[in-house]
Image (tube, rainbow, N blue to C red):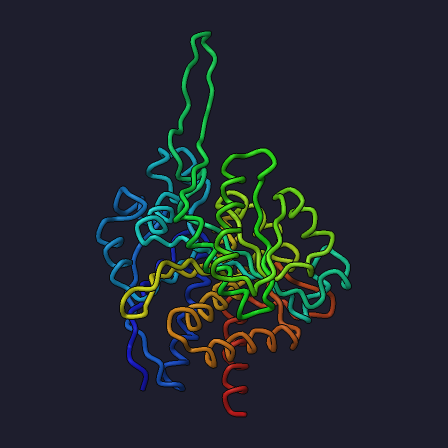
Length: 371
């Protein structure tokens, strides 16, 4: 039996609890059939935490996250909390987790399943076989830079401002993650910024170039402006393998890449920190989709992104590559059998609920495990 690992589950708001329930079923199957056990703790985050505790993330939950081997995160937010002060908004809980856990590298894969080629709005020949990874810097840049605010000018009008800042260390560490990933894939990396109009873009390019020359000369490195990258993602996405970019551009480009696959409900993500002395790294795994409050509680949510986030956890936090592949292949098989949730429903397919999709995936896990 493998050594137990500590997981903190933060289901959050909206459809978060529903999709997290399906991961719990997969974890239970792994425990019963593979002897892979996890010490699981659950907590509140986002609006659910604010409603009960007056804050989107308590200090205790933050401590629990820091003492865990990995955090599985559902989703936060919804119109219910639109008028809450910024520091108490549900999203503030997620931002605090990322910042205090120092999760600076966000890995967002965009892969097109053969069974869902028709779900994309792009032509089949454009996206068939697509498999790219966006590495987004997550704890710096314009989302965290200061000064920021809204001020009144002398003439009585107002102005708002945010500051884009990056240190050399912040760029090097996320670029290093991207270079290492590239070495394990096709040895190709695109670094994306706006060096033509932003000083931070010029600095980003210089730092990445220096790291490339000193540590990763074997990787093919190309630079691209963020606006061109957005265009190229819908024009010829298979030219990319790994993309590394800043917090703001990564936020935008990863959602663009997500829709190449047909649904945000399909895509997982991993947010990683540095490796410590024992070889472990802080990590948080979450689906790319939001809280989808309009379908919350209706068993319409797609749990695949949450289950694939669990697979990423197996691979990146616990080196359980075979088990991660088992989960990923089971998702592909369930889709090949024609099972669909509402967001990816296609002609001649069978629409099923959130829970039934979880059951279909577990049945495929069991079948593959017997072979």
